[in-house]
Amino acid sequence: MAGHLPARVQGAAALSLDGQVYVAGGAGTRAVLRFDPATARLSAAGELPVPVGYAGAAVLGDLGYLIGGEDGGRPVPTVTVFRLVPAGPAAAGGQASPAAAGGQASSVAPAPWLAAAAGPGRLSPGSDPSVLPADVLIADHHNNRLLIVDPQGRVRWEFPRPGDLAPGQTFLQPDDAFFSPDGKYIIVTQEDDQVISVISVADRRITYRYGVPGKPGSGPDHLFNPDDALLTPAGIIVSADIKNCRLVIITPPAHTVTRVIGRTTNACTHDPPRRFGSPNDAFPMTNGHYLVTEINGDWADEMALNGHVVWSANPARVLYPSDSNEIYPGRYLTADFSNPGQVVEFTSSGRVVWRMGGFNQPSLVRWPRTFTGSVTPLEASGGPSVGGVRSVCGRAHGAGRPGRRGGGRARCASEGKPVAAGPARDDSGSRSCP
Image 1 (cartoon, rainbow, N blue to C red):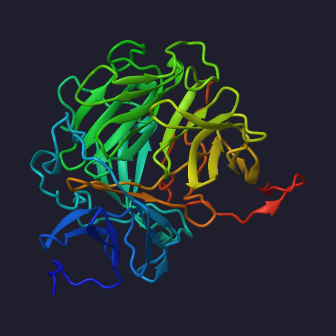
Image 2 (image 1 turned 90 degrees about the vertical axis):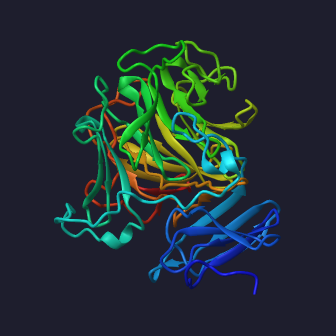
C-alpha cells in the first residue's frame, strides 16, 4: 500500500504527469489530489470545473485528458485538459501563494458562498435546475453588482454589500466577470467605467484595480473600454483594450502594463500583431495560445502572447463578432453581437459549419476553466459540451454602440434558462437554426 486518501471516493480517475499521480474527481466531488510516489505525500492540487465521476482518463505527451463521466447520474459531456504550468504570484496584490512561496501545495479552494441557502429561488416557471451543473456567476451591469446564483435560482453570494467597499471606492457597471484559476478571486471588467477589478470572494473586497474609474486613457493605469479580462494561472491579467486598439498584459500589483500587443492608437485596423481592429476579447486555447476577436472587419485570430499569429479568419456573414472561443481543436464559436444576432461555429479558414439565429445581441457564457495549486500546478481546461455551446444569453440592457459593447450582459442564470436548440440546414449547406 502506497498511501491513503483523505476520504473514501468512488469513480475517481488517475493520470500521471511529470512523475506525479493526479487523482481527479469521483462521485460528487470536484477535488483533484496530487500524489508524489517518491515521498508518498498526498496533497490537494485544485478543483475540476464541475463534479465528475467515472470519467475516462488518458495522457498524451505532457497533456492529460478527463473524458466524459457523470455527476449524480447525469452525464457530463465534457473533455477536461490537464497541463502543468509554472507557479506564479497570486492575484491579490501580488502576494505569493503558499505554493509559490514555500513549496507547499495549497489546499483545494473553498467555496465561501456555499452557505445554507434560504428562501425561494427566482426561476421562471418550467425551469429545470438540473440542467446547470454548478452555481453561476452573474455580472449585473445596471444594478452595479455581482451575484452567484445556485441552480435553484437562489442568491448565494453578492458584491458589494453595505460595508464591502472602502471609503471613496466605487463599483460601477460590471460587464464581464470570471473566476481566477484557483477560484478564490473574481476578475471583473467594468468596461464603461474604464477599470479592471480583482475581488476576493471570501473577503468581499477589491484587492487590486487597474485603471481610473470614469477616466479613459492609454497611459499608465489607464484603459479605454477594456473587455473580457482574465487571470492566468501565473497570476497575470490578459485583457482586450477596445478603443486603444490593443491587448494588454498586466502583472499585479503594478499599475503600468507589463506588455502591450498591438499599436496603441484610436485608428483600429486589422494587422495583427502590429495592429488590431477593435479587439474585444482574448480567450485561452487548449494549446496555450489565445483566440482574439476583432470587431472591425469580423476577424478571429489564433495568437501566442509573444505576438506570433497562427491564422486569421473571417467567419462568413458575421457583423459583430464577440466572445470567440475554441470549443475543441479546429472548431471555434463566436456570438454575432447584432440585432438580429446569431451564434456561429467556424473553422480556422473561416468556413461556417453551424449557425443559429434569432437572437438580440447574444453573448456566450463560459464555465470556470482552470485551477492551480502545487509548485508545478496543474491547469484544467473545461472542454466542449454537446454542440459546443454551454449556454447562450440575449441582450440584457440597452443598445450597443459601434466599436464597443453598450449596456451590459447577464450571465444567463438570472432566470435559470440556458438555451438549447437543434440545428437545421440552410441553403449554403452549413447547419443553421432560423
